[in-house]
Length: 245
Picture 1 (cartoon, rainbow, N blue to C red):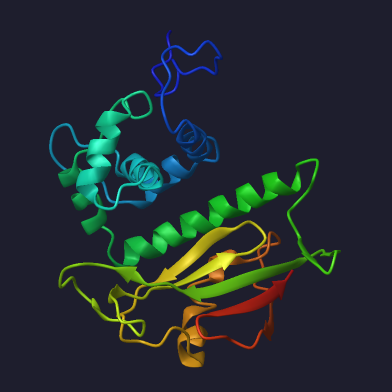
Picture 2: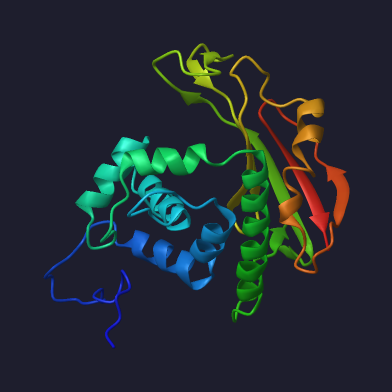
């Protein structure tokens, strides 16, 4: 029986023939498959209806890959998939992507967060099994084993029309100011709080509301919530929090 996976005809060659651009997205897509993210998302999302319905978990994975390729909306995501047919043999239409995103209500979003937490534990375990081990933070040349650093940072996303929540920012531009959380050890974004641009970059009430409920999926590999409560003095737009297992 011949395999029908999307990557069964892809190969690494150095002859300069049949090349595709942005080949790094192939690795991103394969990682999502290998760690079980696509399958887990498919189980967490509601199934589509009607004939020829698409796997919504795979649709979200392909949307994420299209965003990495530079897509800024669902129409561009569809066009990029058709452009890179070697990576996306079955492109997902913009209408299907909109239906998949519209199906993510509160309970579904909670299931997706649990899926991300489970897959993150798998990835962190694989990182720890590498020859170099888990990427612990180094301070003044000393590796701080067992500690994780969570960076909170507000960023301005500009827009040119009256989108929902868009407003004037403190820098004189127009758009949104979401608050994001990144694990400095692995450089991954673990949470994003969508906010109107009229809100200040970071405030203590906003930070306290942001975690641990929204960042609770960043628990230690032991499965416990091991926040140390040691928070750096916040600057105008960023703050750091450390927690350990």
